[in-house]
Image (cartoon, rainbow, N blue to C red; front, side, top):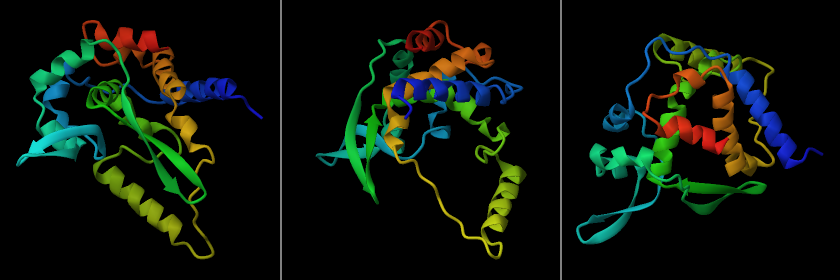
Length: 205
């Protein structure tokens, strides 16, 4: 049986090998200010970590897209250079056979983490066996390929889930992702900042 420390070491080694398969983009995206101003391009759906908005006299909990519609880019600019504190609201999602831990992180944490890994995530399709992040004609080819594979005769499709899904959401594994970025060939084209993010990655390693 593999201990948790040994397992996360292996996870980091696998991540480094995967990241090194991804080619650096031809053009680097803008800086932190540009990232904040274009937030509607990268915001995903889901929990805002308990962010509340007053609507007609009522405090309502809203999701991330609504929350970011009501936060200006000027409010977001100081986030990157603030003291690193990870805050989240824990909850459980009950699935067949197991309970899954979910941590709705605060918008500040979500934004900084997205800034750190978004550019890398968009290149995941370059890794053998991963079909995500492609666009246009390439995305249509992927959809057709999956459809063909699932409709072949004498084939029964199944989805495999991890028995211990929660370990992937642990702070240790999250820190290993940042450490793997630092130790891979992509550290040189991390998002440009004057000091904040790059030094933050080092501190978390």
